[in-house]
Image 1 (tube, rainbow, N blue to C red):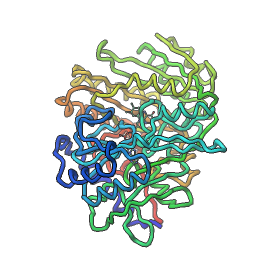
Image 2 (image 1 turned 90 degrees about the horizontal axis):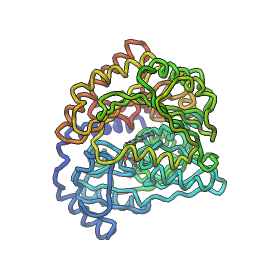
Image 3 (image 1 turned 180 degrees about the horizontal axis):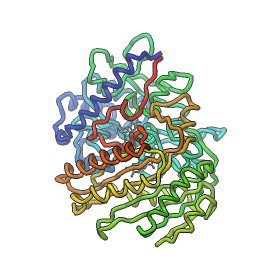
Length: 499
Ligand SMILES: Cc1cc2nc3c(=O)[nH]c(=O)nc-3n(C[C@H](O)[C@H](O)[C@H](O)COP(=O)(O)OP(=O)(O)OC[C@H]3O[C@@H](n4cnc5c(N)ncnc54)[C@H](O)[C@@H]3O)c2cc1C
């Protein structure tokens, strides 16, 4: 059994980890002798699966992570390989980072600055259970791999909307999907984890967060262990992994719920509205979040996006229905609002995810931020006004794009978490929520500070607006949170529990 003290240490470790990202100037820092030695040992074991900077076919999404130099990158293909790598890294006392789909945005998140990058891309098996109720997914798989493999079986799983996002970060941080209204978040649809972690050698099982392995050296033995974690085995770790990101071990396999979805087909209609329709569209979004919340086939999101070429904002709405039905009932109200353009189709989730990936190419610099609140059309509009005002100092910047995206988080999501005994995300709400995500994209390193200030100002103003209006909710979606805001684990609504 875990003890409370262990969780306390884990919280400190997370905070320490977050602080270490703040000194991102280390992005170019040279490898230490310890890591050079660790890489030499790993080369003996992994041969051509060990790469030095610039070698091998390696891509991460964000420009800030692309600048990072690791001492080496190693590609395990099994959990046993990961265990050997961890043992070597602890032996040499070399820091490391773990990479699944590589969509994190900060140096050292999934590409180690001067340490070892553990690239999970070869752990990419996808095996459907005989009863077709579950699927074992290797933690280096992308969302596209999962959708595409399952469509052959007329199945699907809880995945992101974008093809090249990795299951690793997506499923450890929360996992909002088009299927969330029906089944809940990805974290609440993982039935078992295969995890590689460091153990203290104590009689009882005590997992240590990855960052702790080089913060409190004396209690770590070079003893990397593979464990299976589910509701019955190591339930505390099961709770912690569901929202605890990479603080508790390296997950090598997720056993996920598989759901009937013939050919993976759903319907998606994307519309662009004139800004003169802003009131009507936000009012309709409110109706969909509140009055239509019981139609769990329905999902939607909408954007207020700054288009730097045209130098103006655009209002775009995506209507999703997880049945192959065009023009389903919930969107009837929206159909009454005149639009400027529309694309409607019934399509495989895998194909839709590829389309979405083509709209989010790699290589730019990106920051995300998020705020949650009880549904309010007026608040949606106010948050749009905030971005319009705050964008002024940065809007002319090279390659600058920004938008706010609004999407509902229905009670079903909260309920799904509760039914599994709770999770470390700690979402509790007395009704549906609106999750609003700001994204900012730019191209030059020189503009990092200016964009970061823009994002900080947006966070501050959005939080104070929701608080003043009495609709604020504390939950912060971790996967879209900038480290720069120095948010602590417990401030994000994340919960711990006593054993
Ligand atoms: C273009 C884009 C689209 C997105 N769409 C969605 C969406 O539809 N829904 C949604 O909920 N989120 C979405 N996100 C957020 C996304 O889920 C997170 O950014 C997620 O962390 C990315 O995971 P990754 O594996 O691709 O990234 P990585 O950079 O590989 O990993 C992210 C973090 O998770 C850790 N990690 C990864 N795998 C493991 C593992 N196996 N064991 C331990 N730690 C691990 C890494 O160390 C890193 O810190 C999107 C993000 C982007 C950039």
